[in-house]
Length: 317
Ligand SMILES: NC(=O)c1ccc[n+]([C@@H]2O[C@H](COP(=O)([O-])OP(=O)(O)OC[C@H]3O[C@@H](n4cnc5c(N)ncnc54)[C@H](OP(=O)(O)O)[C@@H]3O)[C@@H](O)[C@H]2O)c1
Image (cartoon, rainbow, N blue to C red; front, side):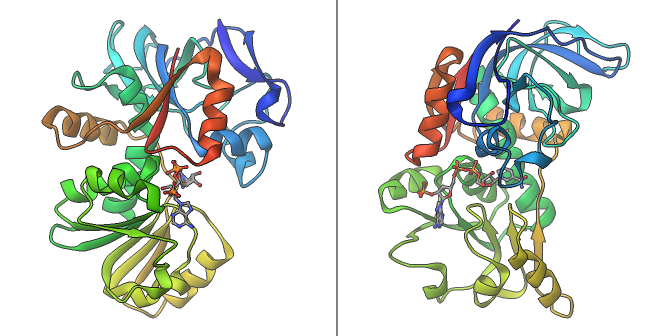
């Protein structure tokens, strides 16, 4: 099969469209013919073997990048219920050292629990673009942040992949949402449904005087220490990147009503199903900034690197 892969850790220029063996699913896996994938910052971390990327993928070559997929089930293992050949499914591969393949490829073998039915309301590109990003937002807001209806949340980095879904999912959970972004993307974040949009350069988090029940630091540019003044009693600071600041935050909250936490997203079929339901109900809108064919994957990765993206970049396979 054709896949975009690198024969070493390195740069975007090391990626080549090449022929690689088609994966063979195990008993608890399904083989998906990938129709679309999506770009994530993790791709560049894995390729560059930096910023924690070594913990997100096996060091096996050729290194096929890509986690998100949406496509059609072509083979099912003996223990891969509830999936059937012909089902349209989406999901993402685990961000883990055990992950050997990637979704910038014509086929991918995925665990049965790492896929769920794609909503008929969205395209394969839109579904793939939601897989990691919307699931991360859901697990961060609902599970780690324990966000409840009527509460106030601040999403730091509301214009990117995770942030665009975090704004929408927080609204779907009944919260009042404030979100930060760069000045040029404020209209986009307002369209996503944020009640208040803050230019992070004009008003840094340290200058905010309001308080929140949850600060979700998607951009992970802050820390519990610099956000503690923003938290109501019982409130939580949740980040997507581990850091020394996180350790200090965990220590500071040991004897406090406030909480500090880190989310590492996991592929959970029930969460994918919830996201599909929200798409069906029109509670979630797709977040695709642009779509590139597989042959243009390097250009797509450069586009993400440029910082000009609103939402997600999808890849048509
Ligand atoms: N732990 C996990 O499970 C997990 C899961 C998914 C992603 N992540 C990580 O989370 C991060 C975000 O992922 P993503 O897919 O949303 O990335 P993305 O699409 O590139 O979005 C990055 C966001 O950060 C914002 N940003 C940049 N500098 C900022 C600043 N100084 N203050 C506030 N916001 C700022 C950007 O806003 P502007 O573009 O408007 O500047 C944009 O909204 C990445 O590091 C990614 O690897 C972790």
